[in-house]
Image (cartoon, rainbow, N blue to C red; front, side):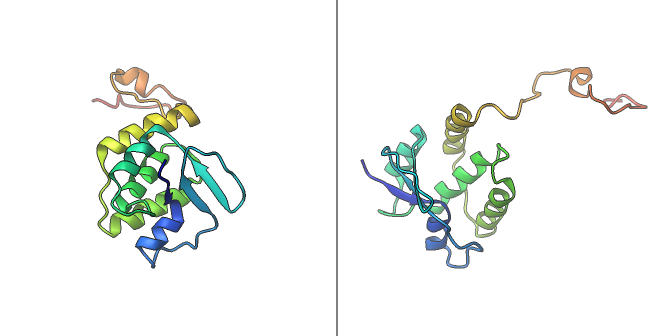
Length: 139
């Protein structure tokens, strides 16, 4: 199986002005290795990213952004993740919505469902909280 470097090492490869120095090497691989300096990761969507990637060694910026955006749904290194997303967006990188959705599904299996959608709930259910309100939100 082909492997690709991603994370801050790949970001630094594509953008030498990336604001953080890589502290480790993150690699897409089905082989599980984890040390302080080297970690491998595998989710089903990584196979698609590897297949579509243009560079033979480093994940393309669009893939990096999609991973960061999907990862931002969980409070794991959230400030770092949000800063990286802003950096990529300022560089004009666009994330693939299809890949983003698939990564969210992958990460939900690993990290659990963190944010519940309120889609389809009425305003009483949505705004039921500890804040006392003078006016109905919808009025």
